[in-house]
Amino acid sequence: MRRSLVLVLVLLTSLLGAPAAIAAPGHQITYKTIPGVGGTALRAFVIEPTGRGDGPFPLLVMPSSWSVPNIEYVGAAAKLAKESGYVVVSYTSRGFWDSGGEIDIAGPDTVGDVSKVIDWAVANARADGTKVGAAGISYGAGQSLLAAANDRRIKAAAALSTWTDLARSLYPNSTVNKQAVEVLLAAGHATGRPGPVLLEAEDAYRDGRFQEVVPISAGRSAASKIAQINGNGTAVLLGNAWNDGMFAPGQIADFYSRLTGPKRLMLSPGDHATAELFGAAGLPNEIWESVGRWFDRYVKGTANGVDTEQPVQLKPNNGGTWKKFAAWPDGNADTVALDARKIHAGWNTVADSGTILLSGALQGFLNIPTGVSLPFVDRDVAGVWYGPQYPRSTTLAGTPKLRLTVTPSAETTTLFAYLYEVGPLGLGALVTHKPVKVTGAGRTQTLDVPLEPTVWNVGAGNRLALVIDTVDPRYLTESTRGSTVTFGPSSLTVPKA
Image (tube, rainbow, N blue to C red):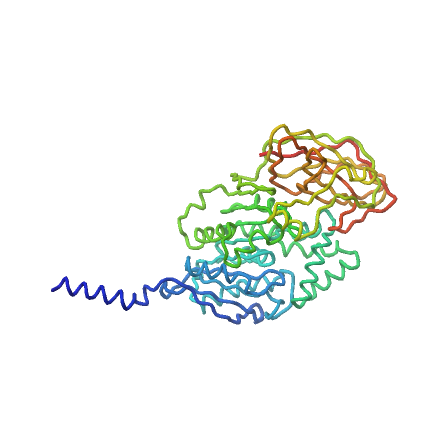
């Protein structure tokens, strides 16, 4: 009789369904207005887990990218809520779309909004204020790092396609990244309300006074807050693309090396935001999978082995599997001597760095590099040097470095250095590049110029070639037509894995 009663109860349970307390985990999404700094209304999607009890639940805060609304992370947030039990707040950054306020370029109010969102989620969304992470892409990534410096509640941050040094990103070696600045300004005006700082910066740029914008960079750059981030012990994951046309990888690698807490660096093919784009929508993506595991370990406290893995993970820019290192690669290197040359400045050549967003995306998605035919590079207006042929396939890994002896005839000249892999027909694929401004008419000087870092597989029988000219459509050039640049004996050092 007792056995029959048990069987009846089991059957009824299976027919009627499990009690609500053990319902299958899921998620719910609501649209909220959250008061930011000064009461500014921030419009947000709040994604909460269901079927996991009453909480409190670990919290992830995700500020939106520049000119992108709060729907940006909802796909990824839904997965994190359903599969891992997070409360996620994906909100539109102040000054954009339907959020209030004005764009202050990650100024104090924008960064302070992250903490205000944490406060609200703890009070209103069953969030656990002792288990907090911050994540974002681009503008949201920069905010996450800056907020982590200010708010000790943030245990972990994931910053994708981020900047860590704003001046170094948009004004590398005192050269304006014209295409990046124009894209950011156009998008800001189209989707938001620029505040005084942005309007003044735009006026300075239009008037050729971009150097006057540089002082605002420090307070808006995580590189200047490294002591606070390290002091807070924040676990930081950085993910950028080799060909990021806005926030190039060199500043990321240097910032990573200065972190003393738990850290991971992931660099992969692509351009700005392309490597992690589909993951934000909730689609399978190896970058976002790493982000989820990172938060599971350092926000939830799950022992998932992330802290035992090699922290530097680099995917070759021209294809191949991830290469993993204990630290930023700085091992064996080849040094190529560069003989003396003289070129005329102010003229463009067929060598250039490509178009931001487009060129890097083609490299990342289709493995189509920014190319050049070396025989068509005019030797009167560009220096061209070839390295030795590699008898077997070789992987470059790290930061190529130039030591240039140079004498410009004009007071100001902009040089653009391009490193190519070149096949037997003289067709080159752009490996990396860097601009540098030279000043001092008639003054011979020695410049140490790190190119942007890379991991690149050079095919057997191919060689490297260096091209230096004085005009590139991506940047504002200060070269003068009719002037000259004389290169004395110089050298190129290329690191190998």
